[in-house]
Amino acid sequence: MSLRSKVYLIIERLLSKCTDNIVCISKAEKQSAIREAISSEDKLVLIPNGICIDKVRNAVGKRRGELGVAEDTFVVGMIGRLTPQKAPDIFIRAAELIKSEIPNSAYIIVGDGEQREETEAYAKEHGISLLVTGWTDEPYAYLKVFDVALLLSRWEGFGLAIVEYMAAEKNVVASKVDAIPTLVDDGVDGLLVEVDNPKDVAEKVLYLYRHPEEARKMRDVALEKVINNYDISRVVKQHEEMFMKLVSMKTDE
Image 1 (cartoon, one colour):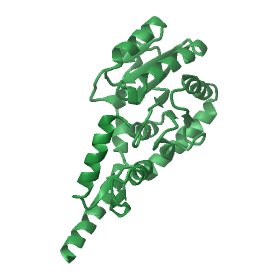
Image 2 (cartoon, rainbow, N blue to C red; image 1 turned 30 degrees about the horizontal axis):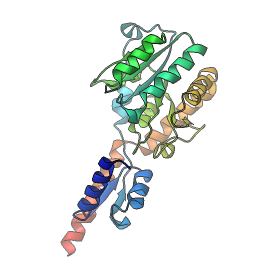
Image 3 (cartoon, one colour; image 1 turned 120 degrees about the vertical axis):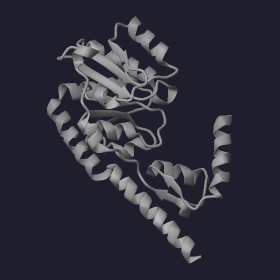
Image 4 (tube, rainbow, N blue to C red; image 1 turned 90 degrees about the vertical axis):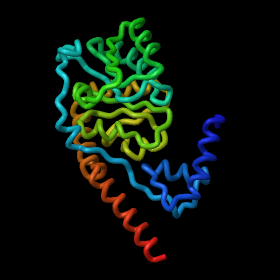
């Protein structure tokens, strides 16, 4: 554990003594809090993250032409910062392998970050058609262009982008780490890959490309899952219930 992580852990343990509840956004995060002795388990409240599903589904997609992408191009993308956590280096190396099998393919990263320059340089050196959008307030407009959406994080407290991908009816390929396997039922509503394994990523993307009917079924199951479990209204309701319980407890004291 790095010095910074140790400092953060100490701060979390100290602050937990001043709290009544600590919200954990995933089962994996709750298990981590217990494992790291951040607080007693009775203070931990599990409220999984959620999104405004209508905002994703009603977003107007970018026209491929304005992005320099032909209509028949197979597009692989990701939404996330270009930082070590989100593994843009693995994304672009997987892109190189995919391109060797699907020459008519293009790649989009919606975001910005410290690894942007090296990622773009790698793409240029290897003849990969890559668009990095930089920071944008309309990520869903780019998401609508994707055929397959990736989240290749090396660690992840929740993985909200996966829920957004599913709501947009995009096939998901994501790393098998932390909370992500609680969101993706491998082979049912998405595909999981080993961390830092571009070959595994490429193979799973190619499977989706070559098996359109199976890919469609995964998208359908994923959309139903998101609608039933990850709408923001459920998150709001759970927070309200938690606050009301705390108020009631304080009133009874």
